[in-house]
Image (cartoon, rainbow, N blue to C red):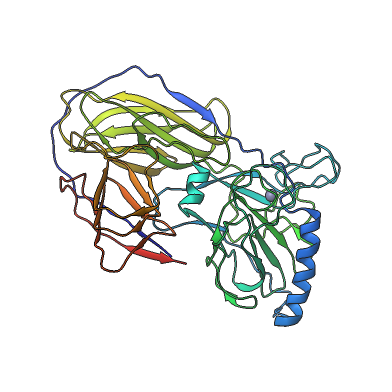
Length: 453
Ligand SMILES: [Zn+2]
């Protein structure tokens, strides 16, 4: 069970201060080398045997073999979060049967892999970006049914933070569609797999589990693998080098490069990515003071050298405080950029906006200047354990909690509060959550609650 609360804000009108600054930006390509056999041969054989058994139990679900079922995108964001996108693609299906290192994806590129032992990648690897392990901990990205169908097979209860080759089983779901085709969803989070029974129906877009790193996996990603109505492996992408099927299995096939701003964030220090399986140190902050150096960061998937992103920060009255652009020198499947910016000493108090525009798509992020309070605690803003004394946890950043509340407790975040699986309030105790800029009531709250198993 988890509750999340989303808020939006009111804002204030303030006057303009000019500014120009030298940049010392940081830029990093982020590549996850998911070059292990996502489903080991042993696991595949045992899963296929289970599939056959399950098919006997639930009966033949094929309604019309010739009415080809098309897929929607198999990944969706938990509605409690506000990234524009939460993933990037590291590998497509390998269409070159020779090996090793004979790589050919559907678009005749080499965004795929094979192994020395002759495995050619059979699916699409969709990895979490940015902050992969943080996303897993917060249940930020879901695997969802790409098309309606019935659950043919599933597994849960397996370790979900693997970082290297192993022979451990994955948490997974397999959906069989009305034409007899199958979609496979691998590497899900322990305890997150849908509670629906084998044989139960699912609708398109329905939650199947949280994307994580169970099974033979080197980091959090969804391995999405598909078979047609005759049980043949297919690549859902139509393309010149797809040797398996000529038609696309997608309702709306995404382009090979899909330049996208995944999110923009404001930080008190540059984000620090950590090695698997550690959570990244995000240093996210949305509350700053005059004279403070803040870090503005943009996170992309499929950032390409032919596209310029326009960025700006605006005063509370909407006037530009600073505008700049970024164009990468080459194409990146995942990349992030950050820029330091020292807030002018004469900048008025209020709510500012950071905005990025790419190809007409606009992503925004609000932050405050001069309306802040010091956090009561430091480190990753994750509260754990049993809280048995009365307390008020205030922070400029995000609060995430798995606490068991056995006292009277307030949470007060300037931005976002996430009550994760494990969070509970004992009978007779009072728990309150505030999103009010640390005691200065700044925003009108429009809260929506969502609950998932
Ligand atoms: Zn894979």
